[in-house]
Length: 349
Ligand SMILES: [Zn+2]
Image (cartoon, rainbow, N blue to C red; front, side, top):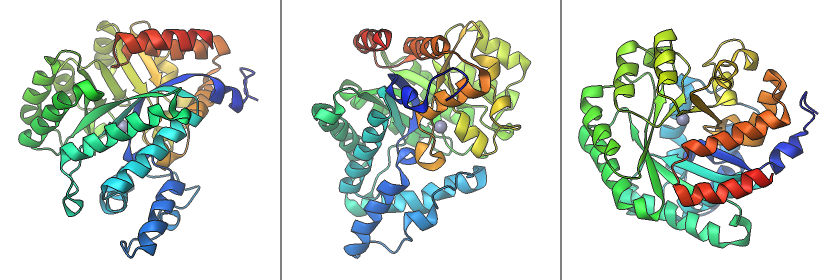
């Protein structure tokens, strides 16, 4: 029982919105293990068992160990269409079981040449899996949209291709574009800026950016460049000084996707949960804070637990929690029809 009087089970029952979840990072260790067993039996992999590679209980992945986990392990296991479908379905099921009613999943389009998949096939496979899940009985409470991510390392041509895919699949459920990737990689805003400025002009396409995730990506030049792209939402918002903070507030209604467990376990904030910047932001008029998980497969704190954590560490009441979830509705990318469905679902809770 937390200070707000809600049990963990109640947080699960509460209909929730998740806006910052990476597809590959949201795959549970158990699901990866199941994939590995199948591939091992078929003689298709030499990789180590995921339960050894990522031992249960290990959550302290930092900037040095987090990104290699994907490039040298998870991407090598999830390397064909059947596995992509299987893992996507497992992620959708996990969010639905946790009481998420609206989900924006994000992913960097990834070709799988050995399996004959192009980036477009990759996106199509995920969208097909989402559609299949939504038609199934277990998927009837969750609606899922897709955000396509540009990686900081991308060339202008690669970024332009991501934007082209956003436009190609917009009608089928792609609702936004993201900037993601290792914050230790310097951002070349002159290279990627024109692509995001073009994305800004695409009707109905939202824009979210990983923002000030680490000190190395929190310099004035980078943050000013990112804000000049006029994003609708910002992810993490950890290393911001007073001037940038005032700039964010002055824009009124920018969504802030804050991820507590990820930031604390990865050592991106100092001082544990109590000193997480959620405490500074959640009451600020002009900002819309949306609690999110980032990579629940790695950090193992489902969204219901993130709400339990803010209740515990910042004293939010049940009314505060419901208010927080409902405010998030203002910054979803899913359109008016989805907002009106969610109004019914969230105000009933
Ligand atoms: Zn993220």
